[in-house]
Length: 102
Image (cartoon, rainbow, N blue to C red; front, side, top):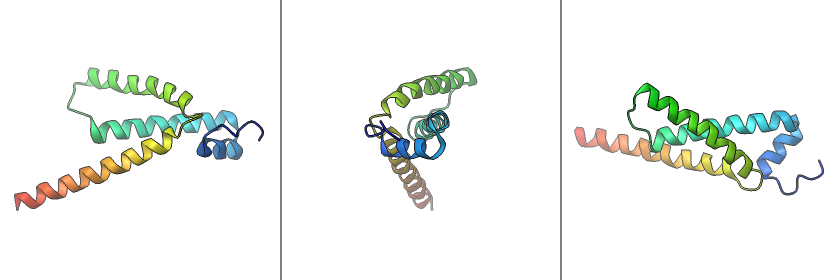
């Protein structure tokens, strides 16, 4: 498709595969999932239900800004790497705690 030379490679491939409307929906859904995953792996604390709802609604609204930025920047790719690093950190932390308890 013409005009996709300035779009991130992942979004460009998605647009070529399923069309613009579905590509943006899938990309936004991926952004929301990765934002929630990164939040839960790195920053989440025990909160009440009302506060959790506020946090998750804020994440969804904030992901709209990330969606706009992702046309030029590799936002989804960066969130994926961040989730991977935080997941490895949490796993190693859990293994270290189990090792120290025995």
